Amino acid sequence: MQKTTITDLLEAGVHFGHQTKRWNPKMKPYIYGTRNGITIFDLTVTMRHLAGACEFLRDTVAAGGSVLFVGAKRQAQEVVREAAEGCGMFFMCDRWLGGTLTNQRVVLSRISYLKKLQEMETDGSFAALPKKEVAGLRREREKLEQTLRGIADMKGLPAAMIVVDVGREAIAVREAAKLGIPVVALVDSNCDPTDIDFPVPGNDDALRAIKVVIDTLADAIREGGSLHAKSAPQAAAVPAAASAGREDDAEAEDSAEAADEAVEAKA
Image (cartoon, rainbow, N blue to C red):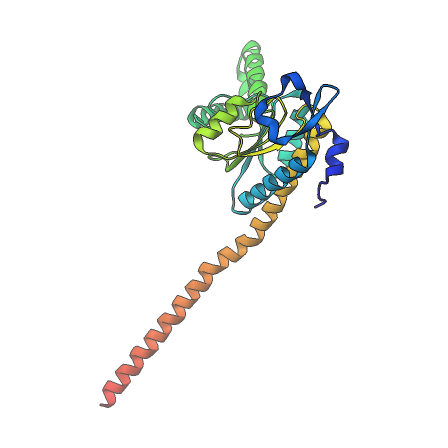
């Protein structure tokens, strides 16, 4: 995995924040200064926070946890989807469906309905329905696919969440905080980092800036996935070894009992 450098962040424009009049004072620890009325991030601080976020994600996935990517703003949608799919994780890049985390029963029912519509499309059920009704069902299916496609196979809650633009995705952040799900987020100068467990200070508006940060986080997730895959066979081998040990112990006990019986018989 190629390591991201400060030069990479600089070339992508990660250091550019919003106009100074829009800055949030809680972002002060991450700010280097201003230039032409624009807030400038301290990229040495950004690098340190990015490294910490990567370490957390790598360890989380290595332990078997899943990650949910969230980013519905236009610049982030494709980056989020491609990154999540590339590392085998879940995503929501259309709009956040309220209750995705805190009311999973409702979300699962919508996913179930989506799968039913998809089955009706493929098994020929639509052929028996009026054209107008079929058109309506197809529109509904397309809308659900757009919203739920990235979480259709998500079982249970994710172990972590990655967010682009915590202001826009405030509901998602609140749901994660309520459930104690750690949040990694690209946090711009106009945002409040209070509820973010692993803030990565930087530009959340420019496509290149979003991509360099999200791709770096995705690389850490892939690394964690590789570690998990390597540890799984070892974990499976432990019970087998323990079982073999128990069988050896049982055989030893049987041999000992037989020896005792032989001694008693001689006596």
